Length: 223
Image (cartoon, rainbow, N blue to C red; front, side, top):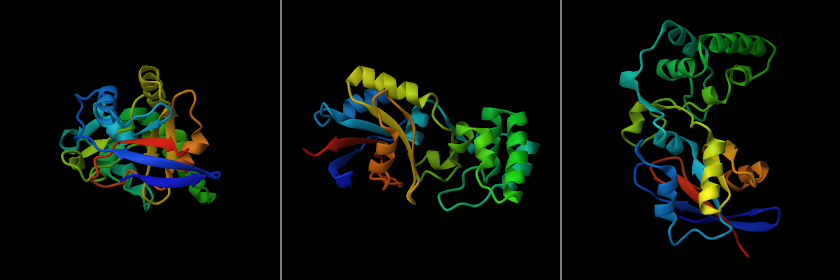
């Protein structure tokens, strides 16, 4: 359902676009072409949710296929509980983080993170481990089968994907990581995108967090 928001005294319409359940065989550009046909206007901004984009890149890994090593079995227990999801507080998602960034970087991140906690500082683990570790969604984060049984890694090269879509369609494009409790981050965008604006205009998560199947959203200035 479309919704409006006012940013800096300008009104914008957000139009979630419903699709089929995306698969690793899907091309995100062709998905956007198909489902926005007749809807997309010249000055619309295209936004893509990070997890569905990652799925089209083959970045969803079944928990049955993940072999959890000793390091992941130890470290996941020290990950703080947060309101917006499990994150790396799971053996399988922690193992995916180890696979993504390597044993040494994860060990260093854990060490720096522990020191940070002693000093009353949060977030050092992810600052050291990097964006790909932070973007990992644990199994059961998605309510949509079969991805409820998958760990979903962050998408590869989101800025490049956004630039390719902009080049093909002519619309500025952003890849967003959003949750239902106020977390909203642009993790990649085409050259003409204003990151701060995108995080304001999408902050209330107009696409939803459940089984809406709306991985794409169009942002349109109301004239």
